[in-house]
Length: 245
Ligand SMILES: Nc1ncnc2c1ncn2[C@@H]1O[C@H](COP(=O)(O)OP(=O)(O)OP(=O)(O)O)[C@@H](O)[C@H]1O
Ligand SMILES: [Mg+2]
Image (cartoon, rainbow, N blue to C red; front, side, top):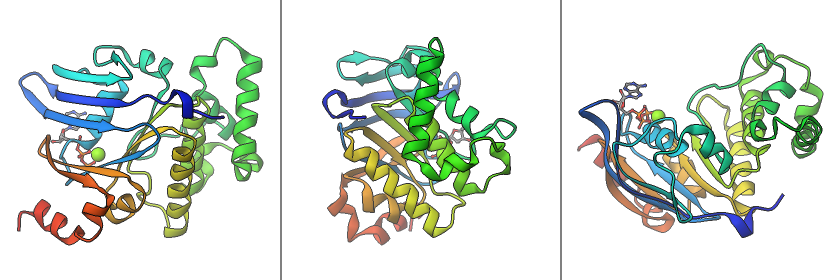
């Protein structure tokens, strides 16, 4: 699996979006996610980070602005068109289907292969080869697994579609430090395969460690931004700024 040659650049320009007409949550957001990079999206609760990922994944249509993948504006396309373009969202919180087995949960990510059972089955097996610790759990209902195991299932459900763009929302919340570190290592592996990653994270320190570039959103607008080195020495300043002190 190698996405290097085809990972497109993702550009967000002046995006305005929200849940009720006349009350935008995103109020003109600009962002560029370079192919093969991890781009962090940080900011306080309610800043609009998850809303931004939902808009990029096509679950929320911007009222204005552009979301450009490669050279195509995808802002107005329905979600399944985004899936066809291999944009994959890991939503905030738990998103496994607890009554479905591990294998069935992973299979759900192979939606674009639904017409070809043999190919889909092969793709599921490829995920068990990539994540061997999930193999022994394949027939267990996902709801019976630990939080870390469920996160691994969610990641396999994303990766089965060979995504070019990964939209990752708060991947380490609720996990032990060891399991969280495994999740970040996997994100770095996905980056090394040339995929474009947008990483929303409350754990600013962890995000800065693996992000090449980071944006801070505040009240639905861009605040500060910079490459890793710009943030590394100065996390305290950034956090104080969020708190308004
Ligand atoms: N489904 C929804 N319907 C209506 N309003 C929503 C919905 N989801 C989020 N909002 C509102 O949009 C704003 C931004 O929320 P969003 O979830 O994007 O923020 P966030 O930066 O991801 O915050 P957090 O760090 O808490 O996850 C908030 O005021 C929130 O109440
Ligand atoms: Mg959020």
